[in-house]
Length: 309
Length: 262
Image (cartoon, rainbow over all chains, first blue to last red; front, side):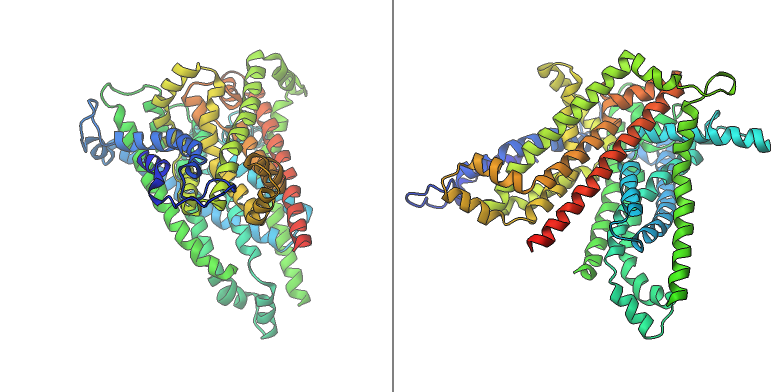
């Protein structure tokens, strides 16, 4: 991907003959016009495209840099396969939970006042929890249902219920599911609220006027229109949970149940010599899963956009 | 109709109350946890300890500086490029859009695998200051900044403005700084606020490249003294909330002016 940068900068091929007395700055074909975008392309090439290419290429190389498929083959076995399956399971469950509950919350917000306080608070709060939570969310749940958490203590002192009777679930997959749902619902609000806002009140009025019930409206009008947006949001949520790292890293310090934590192991040196590129193969696996989910999301978004014109 | 409206408002109230409780409970728990004293009393010791920890204060300062440098870098890179592409190089628009949205499809945990060797070079040439994270963070905020600036540029008649300024003898620098920037200032503020919030919350890249930022320090502290970590976590969540709450008013004002101008 560094190649297009050089061809772009040297794109004098298309240079049109300069107009005489042109003081309006460089025209679109001249080398000068291309120079303006060079800093951006150079920066993105260095800090985005190059590291990405390094991971993707490394997945196909052995310790000496020779081509191999052994890294990818290792992903289909044992602990790595387990980690992928657990990651997919965690992402799918929290995507569905987040999508359903988030859609309900979006509806609750959408039928209210467009500039009301409820909407402002929910939207701002959703932005915080969905995109900037990370480590603070892990600590929020430690304070709530950790060993000495608020709810844990309350249940123990008032009802004699021991939340940890079945083991340290908060630091394993069930705990991750709970905490992930906590940031998936807000993300659903962010992506689904605009879709709900796109429903025209006239459609509802038309159904009411023709004697339809709320059920008729959602079954035959609102539901079908929103379905692509909803499914798209499920995919986006799936990709979001699949790529999340910070919350899990802060919560799980022992073992690596999911793929991002497996990659952490490779970066912090808990691996055998000569297997460094396995971490890159795990990275490639994550990129493929996320890219498929995001690609389908883009397709569904375009389908839905038809109704928003 | 009245029955429909009433059942709808009942359903709405139930949803908002139940989910509101789900989201408020951890925040209340954090407040309770951080004010625990010895033997069932209340104490603000965890909160006082924030200022007493020089490493934590240092990490907070690093994160604040990073928030500023990353926002500035991403704006300096994107605004001239995106303006120029709209004016002179429309053919590049798809490529730039693709590059800017690419970080969405590449998880930070994967990006950091490729950045680790790159940062060996960065630290060799530029020293190992945590501020070198600016380069990585500007990539992370790229999609958010791109969307905000793109919306801003779409809302103005860029070609006419630029041609008018050029016709009156303005240089391209003047056009950018004194014509384009003021006209898309709400978009610039929006992009900056999002960048600030994102950088203050970033953990993945900083921790795996071994830089001491706010979230890295909070995570480390939590192993020893959960109280302080939870206090700082609550503080950052509230601060990010304040930033985004502010942003909702800026967005609203833009809509008003758009209506007024149209």
